[in-house]
Amino acid sequence: MSGVRVLVGTRKGAFVLTSDGKREKWDVSGPHLGGWEIYHLKGSPVDPNRLYASQSSGWFGQQIQRSNDGGKTWEPVGNKFVYDGIPGTHQWYDGTPHPWEFKRVWHLEPSLNDPDTVYAGVEDAALFRTTDGGQTWEELSGLRGHGSGPHWTPGAGGMCLHTILIDPSRPDRMYIAISAAGAFRTDNAGKTWQPINRGLKSQHIPDPTAEVGHCVHRIAMHKSRPGVLFMQKHWDVMRSDNAGESWEEVSGNLPSDFGFPIDVHAHEPETIYVVPIKSDSEHYPPEGKLRVYRSRTGGNEWEALTKGLPQRDCYVNVLRDAMAVDSLDKCGIYFGTTGGQVYASADAGDSWAPIVRDLPAVVSVEVQTLP
Amino acid sequence: MIRVELPAHLRTLARVNGEVTLDVKGQATQRSVLDALEARYPVLRGAIRDHVTQQRRPFLRFFACQEDLSHESPDTPLPDQVACGKEPLLIIGAIAGG
Image (cartoon, rainbow over the protein chains, first blue to last red):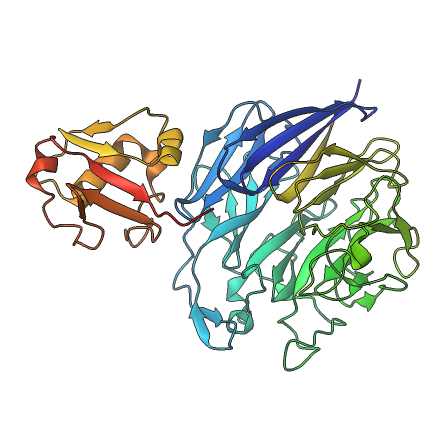
C-alpha cells in the first residue's frame, strides 16, 4: 500500500512523519539532529531513502547530514562551502557594499536522476552542487558572475537563495530565486544565468521595475508544464507562461497578497495554493484566521480553505519552504507553522487536520510519496 | 597528552563521550591542538574554526585554568597545566540563548 513521508525541518531538529495512503494515522519520529536548526531536508527522487538535511547553528556553523534509510539514521558529510574566486560585495540593508559571507544552506534540491548530485542554495546567495553525495561542494559561480550581484540586497531573513527548480523536460534548465535579488534562469546547467523579473514591481527599490532587486519569496511549477511558473513575491502573487520571460499579477481577490509559500496541485496544473499573511511587518494571518487560499484557475480567483484550520486568535506564520504536496489521489497538501503545527489535507485542501501541534517552529516541509 | 572538553553538540557530532585526549606533536598551542582535534575528528572542521580563515567561530570561546584564552594568538603556547594534561582546554559555546 502506498504511503507518505513528511520531512519537517524546525528550529530545533528534524522530524519524520509517516502514514499510509489514507493519511489519517501518523507516526512521528524525532527530533533528529536535536538542538540544531534544520532549514531544509529533502529526499532523492530516484532513491527515496536517500535524504539530505541542512543542519546549522549560530555557534557551530553548517553541517550537511545524509541518510540512507529514510531518516532513521544520519551521517555527516561535507560542510565546506567556499565561494569561487574573490567573493566581492553585495548591498547591505543601508545600501553600502558588504562582503559576501557564507552563513548557511537554506535549500537542498536533489537531482532528478542521480542520488549523489544535489544543489544547495545558500546565504549569502549562491548556488553550490555536489556530485559525490555531499562529500564535496563546488559553487556554480556563473550565477554570482552574472554581474548584478552588487545590487542584490538581503531580505529580513538574510540574503538567501531559497528556491531551486529543475525542469524535468530540459535538465539543463533550472530556475532559482533569491531574496532580495529576484528570479534567475539557466539554460546550460548553471554555466550562465539571466534574471527573469520582467513584470515584477517592488516599491522597496529605487526603480520598482528594475532587472534585479526584487524580494521573491517562492516559485513553484508543475512538472507537466515546466514553462509555467507561479510566484509568491514579498507582495503580489504572480505567474509566468513563458519560463519567466515575463510575469503578470494574479493576486485577484486574496485578502492579502503578502505571503511566503506557494505550491501547485500534483494533478491539476492550474490549481495553486498560497497562505496570505497580513503584511511585511505583521507576519500572521489576516484577522487571526489561518486560511489557505486555493485557485483552480491559475490565479486571480481564489477561495478560502478553512475547514479544520483555526479561525480565531491564530497568529502564526508559514515560511516559504514550509508547504508541500504529495502525489496521491486525492492530492495531499501539507504545511507547517512557526507555532509548531503541521497541518495536512488528504482532499486537496477541502479539509485539514493537524498531524502534530507542538513541534519547535517549523522552517520547512517536504513530502515523499512512497510506493 | 592534551585533554579537550567539547560542547555537547560537538561531542554528539564527533560521536564521543566525555573529554577527548590528543597526542600533539611539538608545542601545545590553540592551533596545534585544534589541528590534532580536527585530524582525529574531521567532522569538526568548520565547526570550531572557519574553513578558510581558520578564525575561531564568533560564538565559541577557549578557556583553561580559569583564564579566557579566546583572544590569544593561535600560536601562543597553552598554559603548562594544559600542556602536561593536568587541566583540559575547554571549548565553550557562548551563553547566548537559543
